[in-house]
Length: 229
Image 1: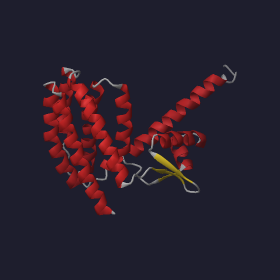
Image 2: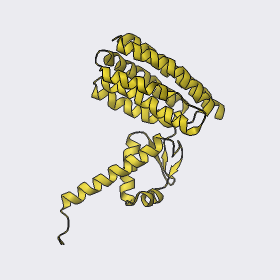
Image 3: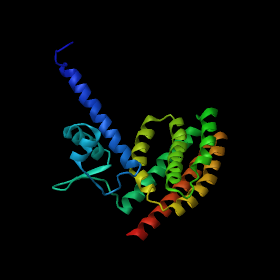
């Protein structure tokens, strides 16, 4: 048995790996709505749940704050970021602009295999009335959009859009089920039109359809959140 202590470089690598695992776990909980906007995140509880040190969780919190997904309040701890309505609207506007550019690029670069995968996902983006079906439809919707975003071939666009999607995704989960069903039915139509535009290589049309789709989504979401406040 080797009783020699691990080398410092290995110790650092292991700690970095644990910090990444903690970050990914907490991030996933935020963007899937298991931890909601404005909810406090207990450092001790999360460390115990994940089986890591509190220092590791603190580092994960710092990365989440840098991404805009968490905020630190003196004497109150760390909370999931809660965007104002103005901030949320701006996130969607920026997403519409940048994703429109991605669709323009994707129209000349997307593969037949990507188009086929989008077709396969299309019916899955329609939600039923049960909570699980809503979440599944939203996950399919994200996958649908990201096939085209990745096909654009721009690393910088993808990096910025990923952060915007993370900021707004938890708010999508605040839709009441009935609204989400109506929205996803409309999405089905617009998504079908987007596939057709991409397949035809019409980048301008693809960008227009995608922008209209995002604009309608934010209008409905803002109206719903205003009703709750």
